[in-house]
Amino acid sequence: MTQMPNDGIAHVREIPFNNKKTSIEEQHTMSEETERYILEHRNDDVRQLALKRQNNSSIDMAYALQQIDGWQRAKTKLPTWAATDGIIFPPHISMEQCSSEATATYKQNLAKGAKMADLTGGFGVDFSFLSRNFSHATYVERQEHLCQTAQHNFCVLGLNNTSVVCSDAETYLNSLTETLDLIYLDPARRDDNGKKTYAITDCTPDVVCLMPSLLQHARKVIIKLSPMLDITEAVNQLGCIDEVHVISVKNECKEMLLVANSEAAHDSLKIVCVNDDSIYTANETHEEKTGKYASNPIAGSAPEVGDMLLVPNASVMKVGCFGSLTDRFDIQKLDPNTHLFVAKNADFIEYTKSTLLYTFPGKTYQISAVSSMNSRDLRNTLNGITHANIAVRNYPMTADQIRKKLKLKDGGDTYIFITRMAQKHIAIITKKIS
Image 1 (cartoon, helix red, strand yellow):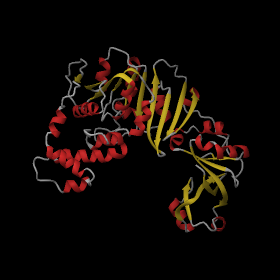
Image 2 (cartoon, helix red, strand yellow):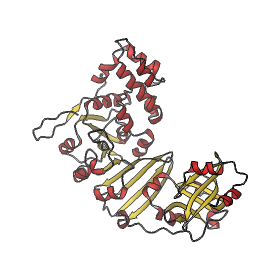
Image 3 (tube, one colour):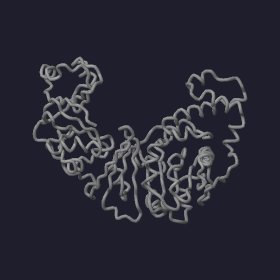
Image 4 (cartoon, helix red, strand yellow):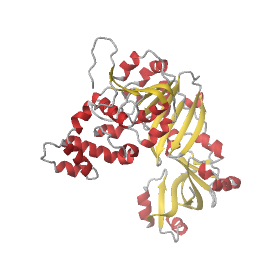
């Protein structure tokens, strides 16, 4: 961390942005042998390379291994950056914590204007995407080596509308004399010992304490948080959140974004559930914001052959806006404690087959059979089925244990849901539609 003078005055230090080499570039790219080694070995196993350390003193092995490891991670996480020659990758921890290209691209559509600042710059992935929508953007980071890496990479990426400032978030915020269109923060979610933290007040900087000042200096504030955080608690602690965006990639929950607009009334909450190209939006009243969710209609009878079984995606499951789902799609929950839904209306089922595939935020299945968990009944129902995908909800056995008991192999086009309904355990056999 960069040391700032302890004199009670806000200090920020802007790093000049130009086309000359930064100190980090001068330090590591002057050796042609190091550069050649990186290019020759960047598809190799980094652990094996570390065991076969070169005796050539002209090769900076620590730096070379860092670049190889970073590039390999970027191939999947940041494909555009991996394909750009000249990008310098930071240490492993920064690569692990940075956003993916998929989530950064989504954020890019959330704000635009004249000026913005990212107060927790890090590797600069989110900043690099957000900055393209602004006339000028300021990257703020307290660690000087990350500032130097970011400055170099922004030049490589052609981001000439940016400034790099070495400072902590609080100091830079106190130095602002103008209102920005956006302030973005991604608070560090690790303590001084490197352990992950999940409470919003344990993050650095403490956005709960900073929120009044953030809204004073920006028309919009976007805060990226861990999806492990309790949404209702985070919204209540910050007190002025207008939007919650939960972002999943390939049905794995990755990020939660809280958005506050300084000029909004803060009397309703917009919920956006994102999973790849699927975006589901719900609006909740102040009562719902505080956790007083309406009850969901429960199916009055067991599902039947031909009914539709619907499974919400990871973002919807995280948010828990099930009341919105049941209202919008005229569906019912199988059980109060099982987040599986059934559609029994014949017209709706026909509609589902043709159009809901592109609108329901999750997966849809058509029910081909329903059985009790009695071993004989279940085997009779599954007669002729040798492969199945098994999912378990509120049942004491795991999917692997059930598969072994039923002597089924994993895979195929049959999907079995073992779940609970009306105090009884049932097996729902389905075929996937979407």
